[in-house]
Amino acid sequence: MDLSEELLKKIKEKKELSQISDSFILDILGKYLSKINAEKLKPSEKKIIVKEVRAELRRSAGMFQKGFKSRESLLEKGDFANLLKTHSSTAERIDFYSELKKLILKLNPKSILDLGCGLNPIALASPYVVYYAVDIREDELNMINTFFEKNSIKGRVFSQDLRKPIDNLPEADLCLIFKIFDILESKGHKQAEYIIKSVKCKNILISFSTRTLSGKPMRLARRLWLERMLSRLGYKFTMVNSSNEIFYIVEKPIKRSLNNSKTTKNFQTSC
Image 1 (cartoon, helix red, strand yellow):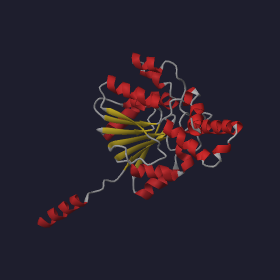
Image 2 (cartoon, helix red, strand yellow; image 1 turned 30 degrees about the vertical axis):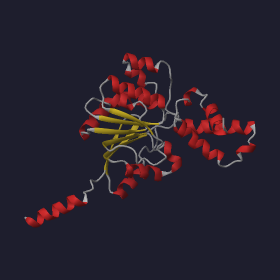
Image 3 (spheres, one colour; image 1 turned 90 degrees about the vertical axis):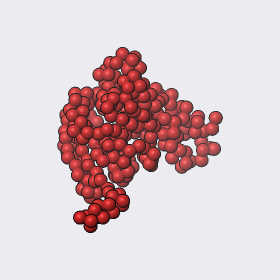
Image 4 (cartoon, helix red, strand yellow; image 1 turned 180 degrees about the vertical axis):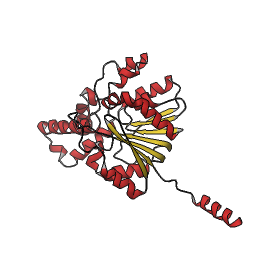
């Protein structure tokens, strides 16, 4: 067993981190190992690396976990309300999901791409919309896949690190990005802009928490950096608030293809 595999196994001994994809953990671990002489690594130094990687994983991938008791059982019984409570974001959003569904319905999507989906699809997916669920937690993707199969939902799940290129993700009418950009903050706003520009979706629904980690309301919940970015890109947006989140409804301009432009020009000329 090489050093990376040894440390990976140790990191995943923590139950709340055990279902994060190996590739995601190895990517973070690789950054630590690239800065040191791995051949001369002491046992005490290995413990420090494991501790630091676990801390980073909790910040980026495990911060929304509330509990793991009987998740499969809740899914099997169709007790979706209690299942959603095992994820902190969806638990906070339970009372707002009905309004969120109305908001999505107004956008009339035939397909949805949900980045960093968590358990959102269990609350939002329907047989009338193709749903693409993207996350790095294998346990939640497996549950969502089971939910899709049992409820005749045309959906697919993808494991994807959103800090990396996302060219392989499918095109959709609507992209959901709930509470993800704050997690990617270490990458700066450039990563958020890259994702917004890269997703092949006409509309994007982005959310941010309006409360601090201690649960107190933020003094300024709006993300002015995002508003300035969207204005610079020429993307229209509106805002909707819930008790815990602020949602930005973003409309990306439709780019006409060269062929369409030529057709229009020729049509106008002939008239």
